[in-house]
Length: 349
Image (tube, rainbow, N blue to C red; front, side):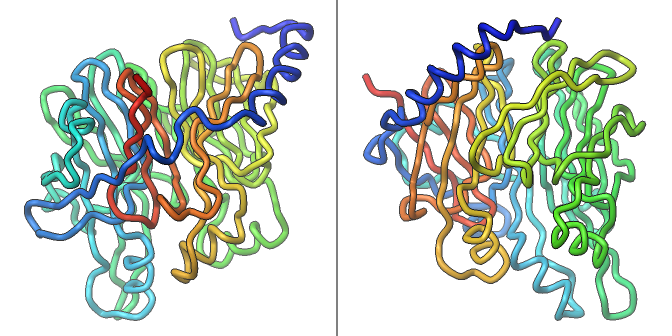
């Protein structure tokens, strides 16, 4: 059960203040960029927005598409917005020191009538099946309207595609149960209204049934036993829920001091969160391509609330706008919504 004493949480808060002021666990000189090249298109992959670790097969699953280019094309072009892919990379080549890897989408683009543009991705740690949110664009005259889909791939490779909330963001798979977040209650103009007035109208679903709808931009989601963790980007916080097969009950909230994006688990009771120190700089970078955005990765202990900075690039010089971080036995891997490839940070000897 997800119950922690006030004494433990208070102690964790005191330790957390010290941990956050300490130097990052991974210094910049421990990290290198790994460019990914799509074998089918020959293009450098931009926008590896989310990553999921598959412990059964010791690989990472990467969802990527050039989001800024797709959105621009949808607004201004009669041509279909650019597509992306879902890729896999084993740990050995990932940490081999090479500067680039050729990869092929492990999901068939042709299976998606309105294009493959994968967003949040999740691996079922028990079976190895994986799923992702796909952001399709449907043509209406010369205009394009975005629709969301939930795609899942079984361990035998069977692909299932189902409609999802228009603002579906991330997914977590756990056997027969699927949790999905949505970052706005409305879409298009209504979403902008929610942002301007900082409304808390997003939430998540369990197998398609709404559970919570009062979160400020529900983003990344992760499940650790009966603890469901949801990143609330505009609240700069993580919400913890005690979850079962039918519902989820909010237990507590952990403030982060920055805006969390995608989250992952490290297998040791910690949540790894990509945190945006400045939403303004992120918006300028993501929407308009202006400047570079800071990248920060935190590790948060769910038992004590202790926060440890794993990586912090204050100017985004080495890697801009990181939206996900995962920590493996070999080191830290970062993905970004706007930058090229991945950033790979190896553990110190």
